[in-house]
Image (cartoon, rainbow, N blue to C red; front, side, top):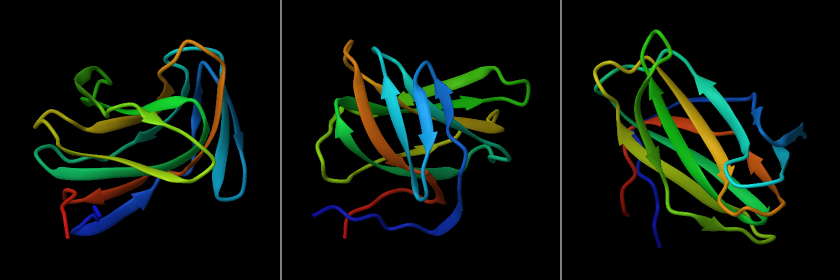
Length: 139
């Protein structure tokens, strides 16, 4: 069983922005409906420090296949680096998705995307992402 060892919790982003899909905020999570590949939702995280190790975690459930994508940006909003997770096949049970990464010395912001992988209509629910200082580890 994998568990995360984290140094400290930095925050929880609470505003998902549509990325080619329909996003409906609910109480503790959001509903997302997509019509094709690469659609979903994202959040923008500001005040990210360069050369730090972070972990971002999101839980998802529903129908379809999604992946987590993290885009590091500099102060001008230009892309510094992109990371993606392996695809995650969804069902009616909550599944955790996360990614640990060390930021570039140029990184000031991070965009976190949850997007569909298949070219078909999908719908899913997801929690608000948690940003933590530190990297995932095994217990």
